Length: 235
Image (tube, rainbow, N blue to C red; front, side, top):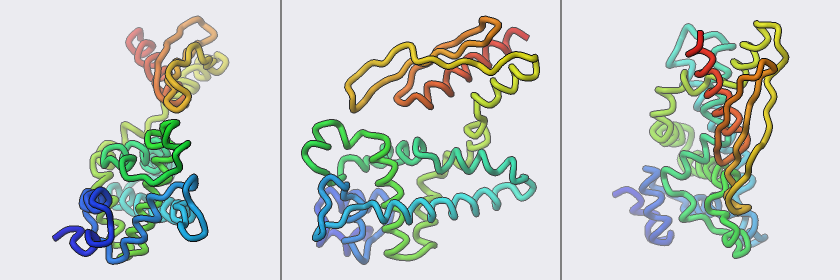
């Protein structure tokens, strides 16, 4: 049964999380380490930073191979933005939320009280650490199986996700002899640990659009996409 070996050494919550990953840990301590934030780490309780470093590379290899296999005619220029869309921090954090990784993170009280279980950077790093834990526990095939299952929907839709709206909008402006678009933060709401940014993008010709998101990067991309949709609709 999934997580059968791990269940005896992991808490009930971590054993359930291992089951959500679809991996039965022979060395449950690897999962415990992957879920230990630096705010509570010590010499006797190592944190997940080294695993995060390794997991980033393992994820990159798996995604590179998957993209090459999915499109044997794609050029490097086509593959690079798809790769970036799949391994970027926002994507890793989204996957972490989908499997409720934040609920099993071990962290210091102060970090927890400031919303650490929901912070994008912490979730993304922990997701990469979990990938490394599976890799060290059972090898690359086990890590590949888990990653491809969790990233399945994003792999199938990566072409649309890889379209960088900010770059496309800048190219649109340059093609018409106009200066690059201007981005400005017009509002910031919510608590410090979970802010929401509103960004306005404006062209020198006066066209503008606004969008809100949990990070400035996401808000800028959404604003650029909204303005592109307006410009394309007007042509």
